[in-house]
Image (cartoon, rainbow, N blue to C red; front, side, top):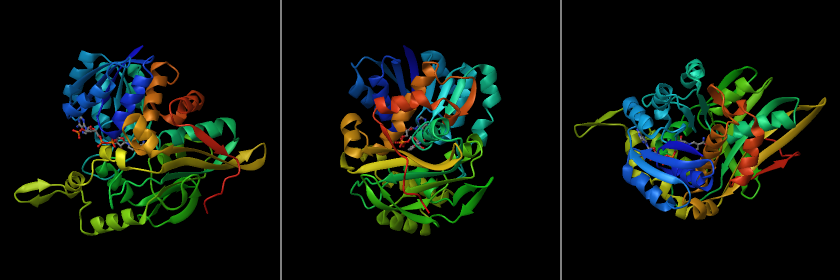
Length: 399
Ligand code: NDP
């Protein structure tokens, strides 16, 4: 029986709220707080009367004082940041001031620099330890479940993992020539950045989309995928002993890439403010305003996602490979929660991480990435809460 506060009321937050209500034995009380109160109230209206006592509040999560006031008033045991990565540090500051546990799904990036890395949040480790509170970082699917899969493979299948390839395939079709499946600003900043992978103790940088491979994904089919930098590479390189190489690939359709290249070429993805009719505007934020809201893609998206990790390493002196992955159907997610599979695959793990923390299974003072906890209860919960995983001990490898 716990009281939780979630910040944000977009696509991912909506799934977390549905799943907290489903798990109301742990989440008996939930406060949905976000910038736009009407979105919190719309969510509450959908979920009221199902065993979890829901309240709503308006809050600007860039404002530490406002967050502290909200936390002191509501007195949650955990704050889940389901708003944007820009708010990670203000919410962590408010958690420190109020001695409240913290969880998020994406690592901090400053608004004015398209750069994400864990250093800013890892710098809180000692202060969280001293305050006796726990922060779980990056608890969505990727990052999140990909780290749990890695810890599970390490615990059960390998003496040493040498290589990890993370494959993120979205075979969904929303019918728009161009739209992003989660917050457009964060998504476009991620995919238009240089690629990077980890090899032999250092990161190797590539041009954006320079490395392309094809892979035949179960229940989706053959797709083009591109090497991207993704935040779990930084934590897995540190936390998986003896790792030699980690790569991250994401599939993109031709229409998406054609539109993205055009937008990059005309300057629409820039985060440098420009003067427009007497006002300062950031082109990428303006683009976000004209693109479809990811939360509105649910009813129109059909097809499946297939996300997982291929591991290569040794067990008992023998080389072995192992693939752990999940397949998720956009329409099934929509029927259950009103959101498409990208929000669903992020929101379910966030609820699971928070619930394990509240039950004391994943709770130690400090700041941690998911692979630093015991993966077993999390893997069980994935099966129970809608993201069953599959395994293949003889997968096709990525060249
Ligand atoms: P949305 O844009 O749909 O929702 C963001 C929500 O945060 C909105 O309700 C927005 O309010 C609210 N918000 C934004 N700024 C503030 C603020 N200053 N104060 C209070 N509330 C604020 O995003 P998504 O739901 O698609 O994504 C949420 C998060 O999930 C992102 O951080 C994203 O990076 C992460 N993510 C992680 C993945 C993973 O696998 N780990 C995969 C996909 C996403 P308003 O309604 O007013 O705009």
